[in-house]
Length: 117
Ligand SMILES: [Zn+2]
Image (cartoon, rainbow, N blue to C red; front, side, top):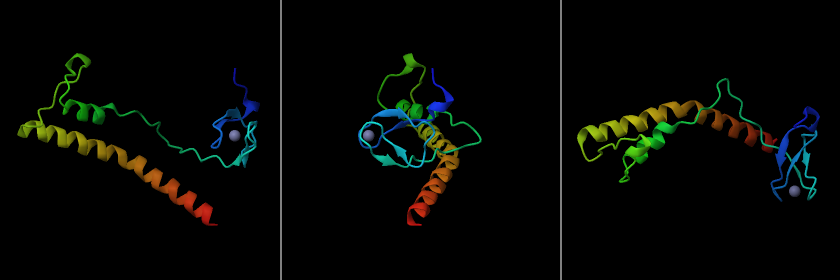
C-alpha cells in the first residue's frame, strides 16, 4: 500500500531505478546511484486526457488490413467518399489535439525559460 509520506514515485534518469522521493522533490536524490535530478513538471489539465482511439482507427481503417472483426470498417481511400472521410477524421484529430499542443508548447517554453535563468 502506498502511504502519503512516501512522496511521489520517481524513476532515476540515469539508472532507471524506481523509488519514492519521501517528499524531497528539489532535487530528487536517487537512492541507488546517487544522481540528483529535478523531476519534470507534470502537465496539469482541467480535463483529464482521454486516449483518442479514433485517429488511430482511421489510419488502420485506411490501411490494407482486414479489421472488421475488431469493429473497424475499412475506409476506401481510393474513392472520393473514402478519401473525404479519411481527411475529415484526420482534421478532427488535429483540432482535438490543439489544446494539448498548446500546453506542451507552454510547458516547454517555461522549462527553457527556467533553464536560462
Ligand atoms: Zn539512479
